[in-house]
Image 1: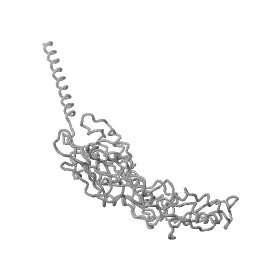
Image 2 (image 1 turned 90 degrees about the vertical axis):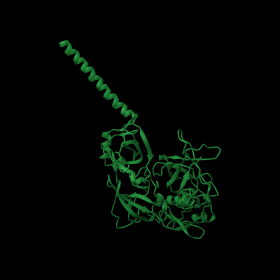
Image 3 (image 1 turned 30 degrees about the vertical axis):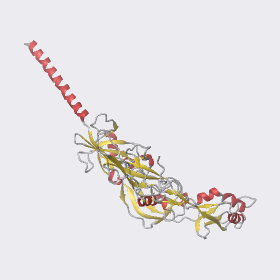
Image 4 (image 1 turned 180 degrees about the horizontal axis):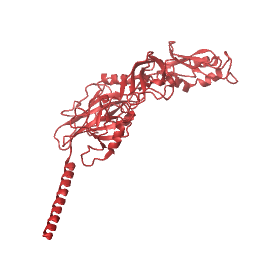
Length: 459
């Protein structure tokens, strides 16, 4: 009887063991069979896709239940980011995937670009859920009582941004140095606080130099109008740079000038022509005239005369001439968001019939009536470039039809303009587009507008 009982126990354990193996195997097979049924780019406005982690789910290289998914950020890390006080730990969602289990996963990237992957997002594409929720990276703030301001400490710190840093994915500096704009009046048109840090930013516009327009840290601004660079009439000379019509294009100061044949002058009315000519060279003029579209020639006879006769405390006039009109080449990029940095984008390829194989990134650049042109070295805004692209019907670009393995349908990709960079005429600039794959006949069988194709640089 004991032998029979022992055999029964062994048999029971064997059956139980087999049952356990069967359960594990079934679970593993179920996970292995989970597949992605769709994975598409989100088309809503980029700022509406700013999200934050809830801390309930980890981040993976693929949807978490799909075979081969690797851990990018653990649940613990995501929880820390959920409770973070840094804007860099927000995310931008840009793709959504569905699986055969009916689950939804969002692909996203942290604002600082450190983390990128898929997180569980619930079972509906209509709202963020599960491991992420919608985030307001900034909140409205009270406008200042005085809206005319100036850069407090002109230089490379507290410059203007496309958005307060890390409140939008790939927010970038509009200008990297404000020294040239030290005396410009800035008008505050909006105010916002970073939700996590609480730091205050003002959106400023610069009528004299629109390329400066952007968000500036409030403590980097002042309502105090700068003095004329602390002009010292015992050592300095004021300069008005005028065009041939007598219009002042820029003002500047030649400072700490030496008396002719001596050391730095300390008396008003001292002749400083030699030092003035040395300081006001062509390189100096190029820096002073940045963004104006004008050029200065130190060898011009009228300029030589004005500088030669300069005395400390004087205001002299130097003549500048307008640059020629030049074309501005454009490089076109595809991006998965509205970022205006090419580091987060891929350069499109120009389709050329007979030499290029049609694909999802081979764009037909049509002929247009005119190139993007203006006075050389004069500044243009991102809005100026967007206006040109729109007027020239370049705000939507298409590829020719191409085939996809296993399908008899015709495909083409349509690219829609989302942003552009400011710059100066004559220097290559950039435009950014978001892709949308479509079926049917591509609309670019033949160019619609006759003219030139010299506006793009894409190969």
